[in-house]
Length: 273
Image 1 (cartoon, rainbow, N blue to C red):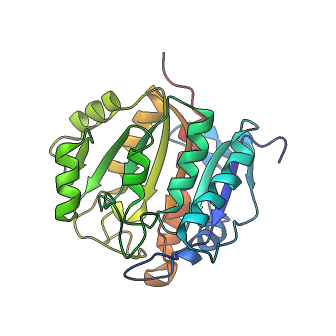
Image 2 (image 1 turned 30 degrees about the horizontal axis):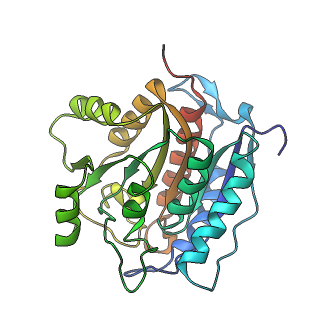
């Protein structure tokens, strides 16, 4: 672990899942699928494994509820961020992003968050808790600037919050990918945390999620945006969440693992001058 630049932290938790459970099995499925990945990335012409990638022990779910689970994730991520590692969290449901962002914000006070999700996740609370998967973006926005991309499902409360607060939200489909990239980058600071709910993808290619929404983003639409961020900003951490491997074909786990590998690569690429 000492020589690794990147640490992956599995968080097999789906305690606030409200539709289809199974995201607790996502981290293990991503890790298992990763053994089939090539180390070399032709897009960036580099061997990602040369940086050293350490997979940490899984964060044990806290049975006391979602709020202590957020704190447990924060502590686990802080352990590695505090010694200069780039940390990627493997979810689990998307609420695990809250604790990870908290940990990164302590190290990077200028942090901003790019939040890719089919859902706004802007509810004040849902099913009796403000710390669940439906409130992740709301809790993060209360901490630091946040940009939402890929949204195609939200409730009245979330609509009203977005209209009255300075939350840049890009619904899907976008009319112009180039314009989207420029506008998203304008809202992001120097240090960026990327949070990905896999349901941002079209369920035709990513069926293995707990709350699928039709009409999502494609592989190259997501990766081209992430590459643009990596080229002009510093990606200091990330999470990939909501893989529910039992709800889709094995290819979904491989796609999720590939996305994690791409995020590692983009985080290692120095921003263009």
